[in-house]
Image 1 (tube, rainbow, N blue to C red):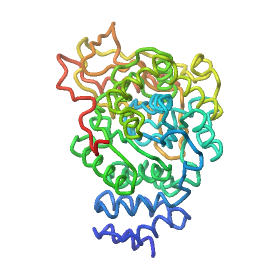
Image 2 (image 1 turned 90 degrees about the horizontal axis):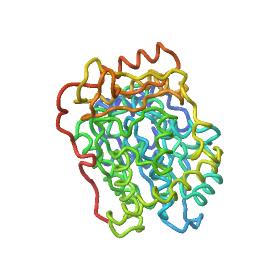
Image 3 (image 1 turned 180 degrees about the horizontal axis):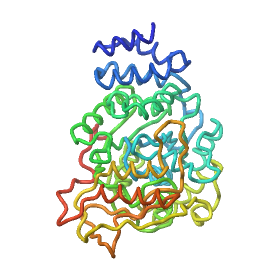
Image 4 (image 1 turned 90 degrees about the vertical axis):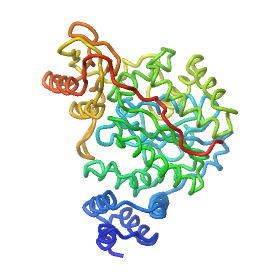
Length: 442
């Protein structure tokens, strides 16, 4: 089947057969489908959409484009569980969640992605740790999961390789927001990971890909429907992304924030809350807790007693990072040479945040990509980011603190931060952090 004819059919709004979709994915995998054809197909899907059957066919074809893991041979004494987020600004949940779940008896083989558009990528954050091997060989991956209980890695060459090519093209062709392509991209990797259960964090708001709540619900329902239809026990939480999650946005700066929480600091309440909510879903789905309340208590205890920190340290060391990262982060994590507070013009309360604009400010600093091959600067980003309801002032609390390579970069980012934050009287109405759950009750 010629790829251009498959593209033509979708461009004209026709439903593709499973055989057509399988042929397209084979071409993506073996290189006979070009990047231009991937871009054209992605744009056709963006505008024309896919039926549920097409989504299932695309997801399973991408999953089968490479190796599918089978954890039964590893004889793990617990369920294999994972979480995936649709992306947000400052979304560092995975760095906390994976070791917390591991400390509760779960095993988390987390296959993560790089930054996409205005959002940060979990893999970019982990690669801010010197020596960390984000693409280990299969034996090392299995060993670290068994010994540490978790391993956060990137897609290896033999795991859903079709998705790797498509993912990179989507990032630079304005097709990131396609519900169908997001569904297939996320689930092809998760199905290939051989999981027992999956929990999805589907974000809505100004920093999310699906900004409108109803669009986020549609995505959650698509993901849950396709995953469960493919035999993977899955639920989703709809979470608010109308402000930065936590107080940092960048790579090394987000790692530092997570390390502080793992060391026992209170941390940002919203960040901890959404992490516990997602991880609790995982424990209940995996049979490690009788209910969400009991699961939440166990998870918070892992932060208080240091067991989550221990799991994180084991993971980092097992994948080539320093053994003392938890205790000596500044000895290992890059720091930007220019640090500047961004104050508002007038004192007042932060009323609203264009969170996407904050993410783009980080990308402009070098903390994200405009092309798939762009390097990422781990040191740059934002810290002390204010949110709706916070009091800020020209000589008091700043809107944020910029970490940049040059004075010019810092000034440009400062202008972007000021433009992204409304300051005035009382903030507008706020949403629940976890607004809805989609999926069966376990």
